[in-house]
Image 1 (tube, rainbow, N blue to C red):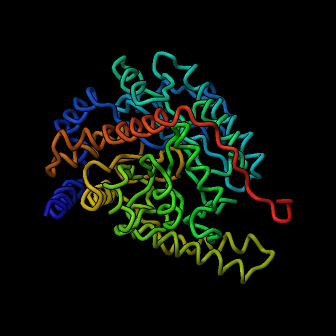
Image 2 (cartoon, rainbow, N blue to C red; image 1 turned 120 degrees about the horizontal axis):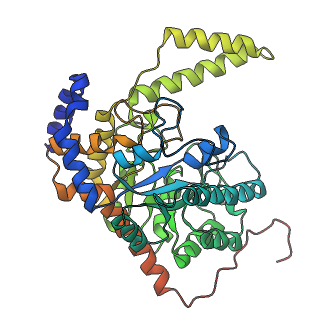
Length: 420
């Protein structure tokens, strides 16, 4: 019943158009909540945006200014403040197309970028590696800056490198990105292992020993289930939504959502239009099919492909996602997994477009206001915003403390034909 009321309320608000921006009371209430409870977002690709667009230099753009109108960045300090962000997992993403050795090097460079962002604005950001750090930094009025790795290929099949990344500050690893790795299946690539390989299971165990969160965004359903079976600590989905609402393989199926209360983990709902809007997902699939068709008809003629895609897009304008779409996913995760297992992972600066009303990191109060207008309590909002993921962090830290005396793992991937 709450879902029906919630979606009806949000639909009415969104149909009002500009009225959405005038819900000052709801947004002010959301900001007051976030003064006491840090909003911890699971995934922001600002480091990659700086690498790709600004020479990997935090000084190349003035993050202290509102960049909404002057750049294509979704993130800057004024908008982080307006959004009430208290803790941010900065993604240190590198492409899955790199060799593992290249990925390892460039991931370390991305970690350096995060640290340089923090060093460039020490009055705003402070590095955090624990849940207590996040709360301490938030109380000081700063934004806790955490590091999350996106793609297990960056460890180059080495538990030693895994430990070095942890020592450098990384506190989660997304086990795969878009491609299946040498030890884990991706949601968007052909399966190779039926989930995790034996070495992949050892990676999860070593992450538990260290106190590094296992992130299951991007992985196949089988990998999700394997990782949850193997891990002693709760898992996270740093930026995923609900597959029952939008049928994208990157989203979390109900079969996994139903296991979250037993696991203790958290699904941090993302804002990516193709993951939260079935209409946008279908449009993306249609465009990809047209692209493949045009390439098959015009081998060696990229201009014909480009022109054909432009004509298709003109005839099929891209749809937009809305706050209501994101709310539907948050509500579904709550209904199936429970209020203790839902969070937020926007994926700002990792995508070209975002839902209307959530175009930048200042959009969180609008989202929270929409939820409260539909009946969410302040206690519910606190759990969604940050309490759930902080609880998971503490549980992961507790497992590591319990295993403190264990020796580091030495597992390697077996090489076919090697002496045994």
